[in-house]
Structures are given as C-alpha cells and as structure tokens.
Image 1 (cartoon, one colour):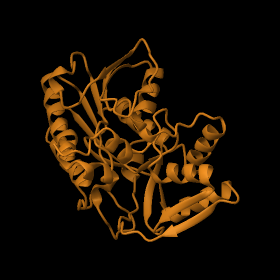
Image 2 (tube, rainbow, N blue to C red):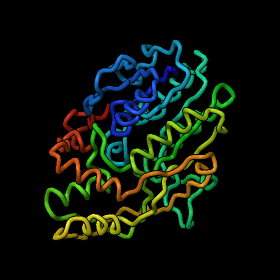
Image 3 (cartoon, helix red, strand yellow):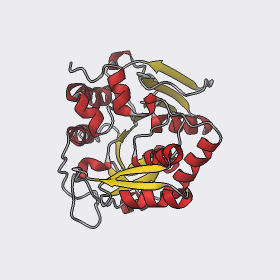
Length: 318
C-alpha cells in the first residue's frame, strides 16, 4: 500500500483521481485550499488537509513515496485574473514541493503540466520534442515548472504530463471546458455558442486522464521526461456538431473569436510506455447527459473557474 500526496485533490481531475486511488488501496493525503469545494467522501485511508500548497512547511512528507501535483491556478483566463498569485502557486510552490520531496526521499514526482505549453503550431502532429513557445502567462508558468522539476531528475523520477483538454463528469464538475460547456448549454438552453469553430484542440476523457496518472504511478521505472496525454484532435465546431446529433433541435450559434490556439497533440510516446486509451469524447458527452437526466449534475457558480475566482476576490492583485 503506497502513501501518496495529491495536491489539488479536491479539483476536477483530482476528485476522480483520489477516488480511483483509494479504490486501488492506496493511502492518500490531499492538500487543497478547497476554494471550489470538497466533494470527496470520508475514507479510512484518506487525509484531507484544507490548506494552501504554498504553505509547504506544514505539509507532512514523512513516508510519502510519490507526489501527484495537480494544484494550480487553472487555464488562461483564470491566470490572467491574478498573474502574481499564479506564478506563486504554479511555479514557486512547485519548486518548494520538489525540494521538500528531495529532502524526504520521495521516489517519484508526477506533475500536471498542460498541452498548451507548445503555443500555436503548424505541424500536423505536436510531439514532445518540438520547441515550446507559450503564448500566455498560464502556458509560461507550466513550462517553467516543468523545467524546475526536471532539474531534480537525479533525485527522483519526474513525469511531467501534458494533458489535452479534459472532458467528462467529475464529482467536482467544471462547465467551462469545451466539451462539458457545450453539452451543458445544449441540455439547458437547446443552444450552443461557438466562438470561432475551426480551432482544433486535443481532448482526453477524465477517466483516461485518471488512468494516465495511475499508469505512471504503477510504472515508476518509466523514463523521466514530458509526455503528451491527448487522443482526439477535434475542432470546436465538430464537438458542437457531435452534441447536436445526440440532442435533436439544438441550435449552434457561431460568433467571431480572437483565440488563435489550434494544435493537434500526438501521444505516441505515452502509448509506447504501454498506456491504452479506453474512453472517448463521445463517452464524455453521454456521461454528462446521463448525470443531467438523473438530476445529479452540479451547475453551481463554482463550476466556472473565472466566475468563482471573482466571487472569492482572487482577482485582486496581491
């Protein structure tokens, strides 16, 4: 039974991941501010610490074998609300965690980076060896954090995962990522608003995302480095059309967009380690529809990162 520290374990991906790891028999310590709530159920092998990841000196590292570092200020709009806070959480706290991990003999550090670190690419397939040209503060914080962590690879295994846009249902739901947002709009309003539409983005089902982290956890021998994690490169408009086919009568409204990001992620490097994709964007859409029809879909303001950060006054520059 491994003892694992999961930062951001109450988040969108974290909530699903922690439940999965508990079912696998691990002992989990979660560090999370719980700004967006805590949807984890009590468990004999779960310890939840409601605290800021920046308070690294108060985190109990004794006996920790692996760290899965998910805590961050998420996505471009969220980071732009408070860049200073974002650099502190996304980069400085990461470095401090890594140093504590080294001092306490942690064997493995798994980091949730972002597939957006590449910036805008013309290449048909974006692979890990391409130059990183981040175009936003969020992208830059992820790139710098990766480089900080990889400087510790002589001390412990470092696996930097570059996820595509994660989609699907989670106990701590997000309704501000493309697949989830469009599905929710269609369910609620019978209309989806698409900004642009031609931008291609890679996607990954949340259960596959959980399985990626578990894959590295159970295969610590995998070489340190960065690994893409995205399998379906689909345009924004194609996603909306997939949803429309499932909900007849739904309207798609297309408006102009100044968002230039369009890229296709290649995850062959991850697949070569033995990982196998099991789920699809279509599965994610079906899951959300079913949860909605069962009356169990959380639609609160905390499902929208920017709106909730403003509610918490986290947009105040510090």
